[in-house]
Structures are given as structure tokens and as C-alpha cells.
Amino acid sequence: MSPDGTDMVTTGYWQVVTLTESGDLAGIERAVGELALAHSVFRHEDGKRWRVEAICDHAPEEWPLSGETTVQPLEMRDWVAESQAALPALDIGRFHVRGGWDRRGHAGQIDLVIEAGQAFGTGRHESTEGCLVVLQQVARQRRVFSVLDVGTGAGILAIAAARLTGARAVGTDIDPVSIDVAIENADLNRAGTRCRFTTADGTRHGLIASGRPYDLVFANILARPLASMSGMIAREVAPGGDLILAGILNHQVPLVLSRYRPLGLRLVHHRRRNGWSILRLSRPGV
Picture: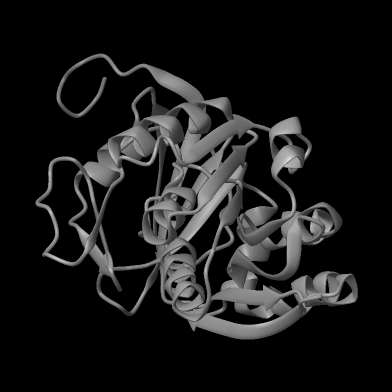
């Protein structure tokens, strides 16, 4: 029975939430990664603690993190949509990121409406926010004509790049639900004619091949997949082009760079925020 008295239908999974004062993000990543099917780490609103959210396939008898912890069955609800609907609009440089329920931005801002849905990537995580910041940095320095967004989620980076630069953009994700959400968001933001999305494992798809190489590539995933996919991601970057990598904890940067530097890419900007890193790498021009 749920708190409101209705019958609770569960997914068979368990949600674990911990508020911890530990500043050891690497330790949190290692400890939770061994037990959870998926997890996220956010700065808590009090600015002093970290909120660690994890999904497990059983109720853990022991939990490796100290702090206030709750463990409960995961209900059959759209948690992503519900959490996004409660969040206010966000200004990131020229971008005003909001849900459809919120107010438009000011004159001169680029309004990005990202509706709540079953896909990740709304601009509120440090990695996505950082990608939007670095995107604007690139656009101030040169023209952008073609964009590839690997692991596009809700499509925000591809859509933002198309809106800001007028470029054509391709977004891919292994999750077909994410692709449906990204297509809806592109149409909602009047970018449907410049953005194409497809389900793909990495960059293995004819749509991607037909547009390569790209002069701007995003890969906002996680450090380990970025490292293992370095060959396929790096080959998509055109001479003179940029690669923006994110989803990387600060201590994981050397691992990621060790895979991309030998592929002809050099680090030109490293943005750090709340324990997360965003890397801008460039391939020298012809």
C-alpha cells in the first residue's frame, strides 16, 4: 500500500537514497557501483552533503555509505518525469532550459523546452550543463556545420547545438525510448528539420556513417564506456573539429585522456564542477 492509501505496484527493484557528508566521490563510485544496477550522485540542496540515488535488484542487507539512508521498493511510476516537473528553469549562458510548464526566457535567450520523460539529459546535471557551456565556447570561436551526439538521451545537446549554430545534428542512443523523447523534444524546439535521431550501439549506424566526419562531437556518457569506445568516437571527429566528453569524475580524467590522446586529439579545455569534469579535445586541422 502506498502512502496515499492506494495499492502500490512495484517494479521488482529497490531504490536506495543516501545523504552523505563524504567528499570521496571516487570511493562512492566504487562502493555503490559494485552493488547497484544504476546510480547517480548529486550535490544536496544544503551544499554540504551528497545525495546518492541507486537502483538495486534486491534490498541490500548492508550499505557501504554512511549517512541518512532510505530503502524502499521502486514503484511503477515515471520517476524521471515527476522529478523534472518539480525543477525550476535554468539559465546556462544564452540557453534558458525549462519544462513546458515554465515561463519563457528573456529576449536574446535561446529557449530550450525539454519535457519530462523517460530519458536522461535535461541540463540539470553538472555534465550536461558543462557541455552546454563548452558548446557556447566553441560557437564563439568558429562555425559549426555538423554535430554528432553519442548517447543523446533526451536530445538536449543535439537540439541546443542546432538552435545555437544552425548546424545539422545527429543523435544516437542505445535506448529506443530515449530516441522517441529526443524526436519529440526536437519538434517542440523547432529543430526537427535539423536534428535526426536513431537507435544505435555507439556509432555503428548507416545514418552516422553517411554524415561523417563531424566538426563537433558530444559524448556525455560515463568514463568507462568513453574509454572503451574511444576508437569509434574519435574517428567521427573531422580535422579541425572538437570532441566534448562528459560524465567523467575528476579522478577519471587521466584514464579517459590516455585513450584519446594517442588517437590524435589534444586537450584544449578542462571544465570542473562539483567533482565532475568536461573535456574539450580538438583534432588539428589539415
